[in-house]
Image 1 (cartoon, helix red, strand yellow):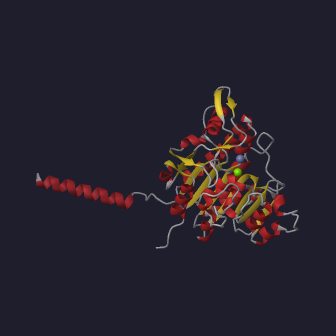
Image 2 (image 1 turned 90 degrees about the vertical axis):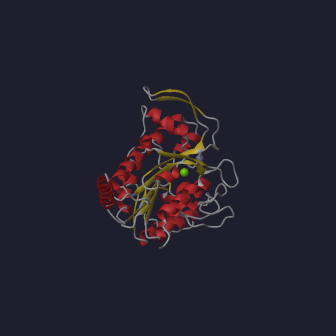
Image 3 (image 1 turned 180 degrees about the vertical axis):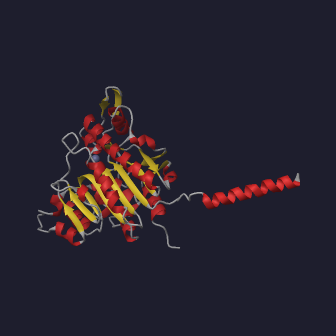
Length: 362
Ligand code: MG
Ligand code: ZN
């Protein structure tokens, strides 16, 4: 009997030690973070898109889910500037603030921290690149309306890939500054909507799809634009062996809400979800990338009073033309995803990113 027990213990030790040697190490920290912000994307916007898509979304693949409280430092109802700045600097700030704290002091953003650490960085959006959400990661001003200053700061920010709208903020400026030249001097390939970003295979890229915002899907934006722009940014940024931080925004879900236009909300939601599907497929293959998907706030106080998956139709009602105060969902996939379950302040998303991506020395 004693001999048998010895054999069992020995066999157990042998098997467990070989497991330690042979099991593929699962990283608990990501090499890359892809942060997708659906502006104005509350639960109803998601379910509107799901219904208009015939009853499913790629987003349903994610099972690490939490809720983020979106209040700003000076308002129960946040705007997109304070909402994005909470994510970028980890502090609640006042509505309209871009990359500054509640006292107006510039604070280093998660994108700038990643850059300092030698990672590559990118911003992809369907609006003007100087608009509140992308600007909050690469600029520091007390008002989102100062888009001319935001453009100057973004041109000098060192962001490796910028894909979106807003060419007029960078050239044809009232002050005569040619920021396209600044971007080119920093080593970026600068392209406009007449050129195809898909042809770029390496290096730094700034692609402007228009003088201002890109059109909505309903008004003819290429339905492959956001997905292809996101995959292109990933292709370029992932060439850095140290890793990357990329923010992708589905900007116009918010504008559908402001317009109380259910078809606008639904089509933008489906477009954003297609991008989510493509990003997740890439991240699954990569294995070292954390993907986090959330919203800065809900827009429109949208409700679904009826609908049909079969007809891909919804009966939507709105309570406001502005934003609302409710929590918004957070979905996470990849190394570190577990940290995003539960109910927490929007600022916690920054602190998790910092813990996971910006490792302390030693
Ligand atoms: Mg936005
Ligand atoms: Zn809005």
